[in-house]
Amino acid sequence: MSVLIFIDHSEGQVKKASLEACSYGAALAGQLNVPAEGILLGTVTTDLSTLGKYGVKKIHQAAQEGLNHLDAQVYAKIIADSATATGATVIVFSNNLSGKAVAPRVAARLKAGLVSGAVALPDTTSGFVVKKNVFSGKAFAHVAINTPVKVITLNPNSYPVREGEGSVSAEVAPLSVTAGAPKVKVVSATQATGEVPLTEAELVVSGGRGLKGPENWGIIEDLAKALGAATACSRPVADAHWRPHHEHVGQTGIAIAPNLYIAIGISGAIQHLAGVNRSKVIVVVNKDPEAPFFKAADYGIVGDAFEVVPKMTEAVKKLKGIA
Amino acid sequence: MKILVCISKTPDTTAKISFTQNNTKFASDGVQWIINPYDEWYALVRAIELKEKDPSTVLHLLTVGLADTEPIIRKALAIGGDEAIRVNADSADPFYIATQIADIARQGGYDLIFTGKETIDYNGSSIGGMVSELLDWPYISLAVKFDLNGSVATVVREIEGGEETDEVSLPLVVSCQKGVAEQRIPNMKGIMSARTKPLKVVEPVAAEALTGIVSFELPPAKAGVRLVPADNPAELIRLLHEEAKVF
Ligand SMILES: Cc1cc2nc3c(=O)[nH]c(=O)nc-3n(C[C@H](O)[C@H](O)[C@H](O)COP(=O)(O)OP(=O)(O)OC[C@H]3O[C@@H](n4cnc5c(N)ncnc54)[C@H](O)[C@@H]3O)c2cc1C
Image 1 (tube, protein in one colour):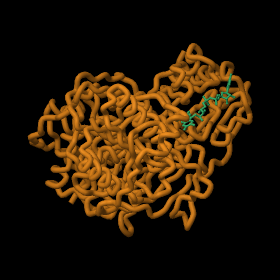
Image 2 (cartoon, chains in turn cyan, yellow):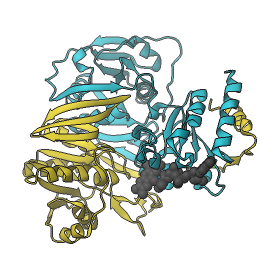
Image 3 (cartoon, helix red, strand yellow):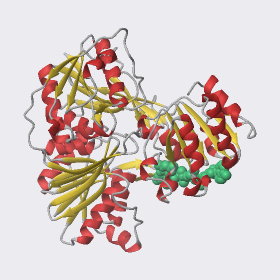
Image 4 (tube, chains in turn purple, orange):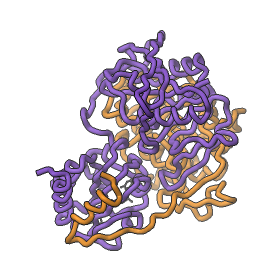
């Protein structure tokens, strides 16, 4: 028996979302008194043995370049076979784009109950109950999985990356697979290199219609840059093409849970809040004291963004000693 | 060409979320129901566009739900589609739902199945993937662009940190999100014709629910906002650094 963690990679590296899945899977393995093992398909530059410090004992790697592009059908078969071969009783994925592509297939293949979007470790005192995000961040559900094999996908930024004591290294075991030819042909792939995906960002600066036009985004970008934050926006801003679609957060955009969310010139409509209300600290800058967003905020300034935001940027730079 | 679009009913985006029966049931009293936005705006509209391009295309809508989902499926038919199927069952377990959809897909001889990227109530993002596995078809998750040339689809999908353009022969399951199409408002003609479009009700096939909701919980209320004067943004930054310790 074991907990098997799917470790995904992009640009040849294991990213934060998978490290969270490792930490979560290792803690769950501890709870169940079984070892935590990882599975990685493809080749990476990350030294996989270092994942031992997150509590993963062994990593099964199918180091074939042909597996570097994630193909849901091919991946699901390999992961399901490997789970069966290693006797895994729980398979953990990040609920990132890779997890969303593969986890449901693995679950259906194994006829394993799936809970996607977990936000905490399962309660295993009686049965196996996982707390998950529902109603787009407006509530949680406690969901029981009733099958012997279970699949969980963990929401990004919901469980901290935890390094254990000392420097334990994980055993990297080659996994030989005869992957069927993928039915999906990858024509091209573009990576926004170096950018932190919005779902993984710890700090986010977001702008709304209150900024009046795309030409005014400099103040948002300057603050984000000073803080080392990612940028986001409200839906009308993306709809008007002031900002790219992938920055649109909310009920019909991306749901995020950063440590800090700064909303500038955003009214705080219920659909916007749904995507950001799991942020640990919310700061609102809005010239209207009646803006609904203040009710969901921890800190706020009632004022004109064009005056307030550059001063915030100055203060951050001063604090960080950036000239 | 036969296309199946999966439609789900969800509470309106402004609906107040609360629970009854000791937090085990969603309090649906007075709640407005809508077509799940991803199903309506992207999956359904793209399928309609494909049918407009090739009028020989057969477009069916499918929902797994009890009789109270019929207004939603009629509303979807008013936007487009030839006919609808309702599997007379209700479940919060994705495997149960996917089993029903896969069964309809097998019997109906469809070439292409569209779902929305997720529902805005259970946020599972799992039906498309499960259906594709049950059918042993390829699956493209989180598509932002979909084109069809004969029986070969060219799809752009969101991947970690970027986008990928794929080519794949039908049959295929695709989950759709923003970019695939633009929202359409049903017109009078559509609303009238939807009334007479066939809506077939079928009983579910035997399937197990592998998961079950034990209870719901609302997030704790915020303590209240702490306002900083507009002439002192530096104080806000100090509080974020020293008190909230977020950077
Ligand atoms: C089905 C559905 C789904 C939706 N999904 C989403 C979603 O996913 N995400 C989303 O964001 N929205 C979504 N919406 C839209 C949502 O209802 C709001 O319309 C939208 O969030 C408003 O965006 P905004 O706050 O940028 O603009 P507005 O509501 O126009 O607010 C602008 C704010 O800027 C303030 N302001 C103006 N000038 C200044 C200044 N100089 N300094 C400081 N503040 C200023 C104003 O006081 C105001 O509060 C959805 C709507 C529907 C119906």
